[in-house]
Length: 219
Image 1 (cartoon, rainbow, N blue to C red):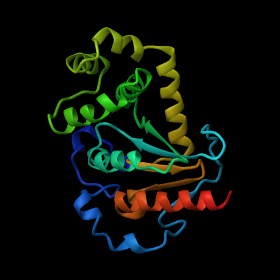
Image 2 (image 1 turned 135 degrees about the vertical axis):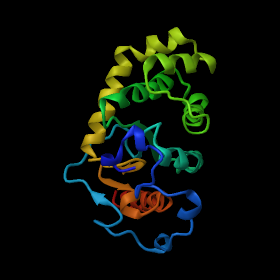
Image 3 (image 1 turned 30 degrees about the vertical axis):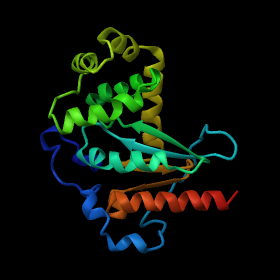
Image 4 (image 1 turned 90 degrees about the vertical axis):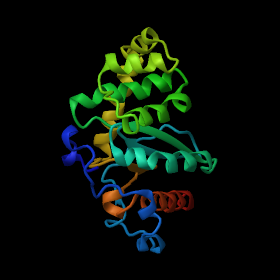
């Protein structure tokens, strides 16, 4: 979804930033060599990464209530499991508006407690399949409690300095990459791509793979 289209009233509307995965796989653009300025953008100012020597950072920018992020999640999760050993993947929840903050912090609660694998997909499912409205701290805490994470532990972590710092950093990264819609991908602090540039997220992931290769060859 493009940034200007983020309206809770229109959350299920179609957007150029993502298409159903079945359509993505059939894109004729998939076989073309990525073109700078068309398929991806080079950042004017590089964003510092903290992944260690010989490693390449790949960031996925997302929002739990975004239907396109939900559609992309299974494909991206499978890609992460098979990612090259020199690629370090970070998921970064965006905050385009103040009411995004609760879900943004929820991700960092999961991360801080080592529960991303257990809870990340469940929250997408609850929002998009079960149609639960999970966009405030109290309702997220109640939902977490029903899914094995005690409400008090969730809220204590949610309100912790560490989670607040991570959420602030996530918004800084979103701004540094000039994210205009989600899902979106950032590569090595140098490149940005999303579905509005490539027309599909399947293609965006291919472009990210190409850019990873270019970074690798440029060492």
